Amino acid sequence: MTYHPELMTSALKMTAALLVVLGGLCTVLYLIKRFAGREATASGGRLLRIIASSYIGVKKQIALVEVAGTVLVLGITPDHIALLTKIEDEKALSQLKTALEEKRSVPFRDVLQKMTARFSEDETS
Image (tube, rainbow, N blue to C red; front, side):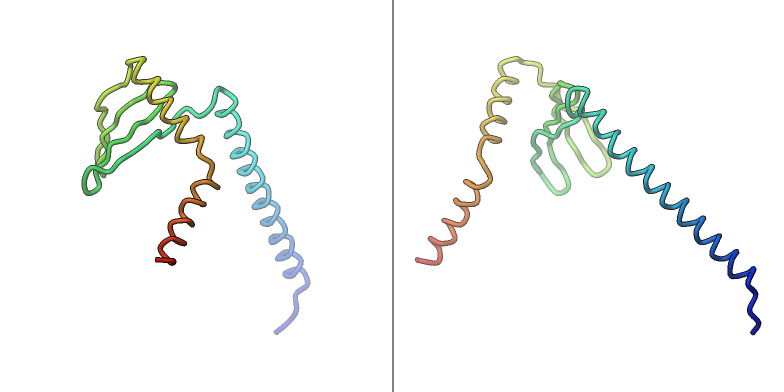
């Protein structure tokens, strides 16, 4: 087996070029992901938000979705999504927002304490 110095140098150059290209690609993808996410939130928040969902059968659910400020009720199956209705009543929207604020206002620490209290009660009985 003979040693060819030009083969080794060309292999090192090719490997270095490949690493530079892959590093540049990863950097560009990271920057796109980072700044694209900021543009969506800077323009008034998330455009799509799942408010609540509930399963009504096997692989069938109803979801409350907010899309650009409009609340939609969707029926979802594995192969179809259907618009059931739009919630446009101001009273219903205000009740929904109140319920969501109450749901969010409970700190995780309190929920965790309730759960641990249940387990400690079960162990003492």
